[in-house]
Length: 252
Ligand SMILES: C[S@@+](CC[C@H](N)C(=O)[O-])C[C@H]1O[C@@H](n2cnc3c(N)ncnc32)[C@H](O)[C@@H]1O
Image (cartoon, rainbow, N blue to C red; front, side, top):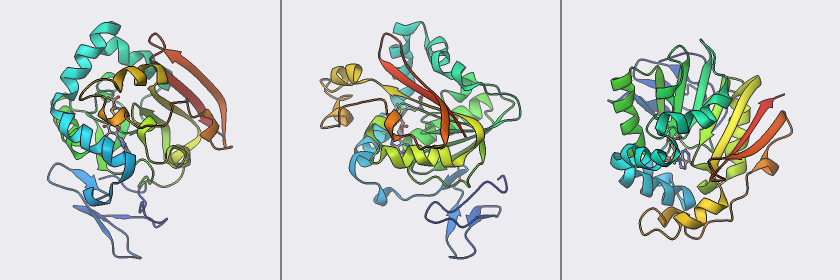
């Protein structure tokens, strides 16, 4: 377990690193590293609203997520090419410290340099367990956390790159999550946010099983207006025939 980067997601106290847990010495709270080395910052029972809808969906779909993605990406030239369409915007260099918010099955990290130090958080334990498999299979240099994007367990100014792909449209509080991504990014760090456009969500919501999380959602607009003031170089674009939006910026 690495030092110095951790804070209690429920307050601003730094966490001390012990062998099997992180400890908040002021409150006595302990955040356990489980048998799969996933650090537990939340409990299933506290997930609610749209986050719960999304978590329930991903927990049930997690064992089939990777094969589903392979089939979907076959329409866009294969998984590696399709993922590199957005991963190329990250500019990850050797020895950087990188955070993926909503890491899912760690499918993106497979295609990135192995010489960086990755952290991944997700609210679905099902997805994180698939990440563990990929971490072991591909020897990914990654620390996994069971956490909510809206309360990150990291201190301010910790990461050289922070990115998120594919979940924010359905978060309970998009602005809180975006402020968190910016808070934990270092000065000048690249931040990227990417998710489906309204156009594709309208198609998804009609599907019997996959459509469930998309039903009764807010209309999707790329959340540029939710960015805090301490970012610059804001760029936004749509890729893959208008199915995905990408926002990139740097922390001031
Ligand atoms: C479409 S998947 C994307 C996974 C991965 N980023 C990828 O590109 O394959 C969306 C992910 O967002 C996660 N998620 C949804 N709400 C979340 C929240 N509030 N905090 C953290 N992760 C969340 C889901 O559990 C799921 O793994």
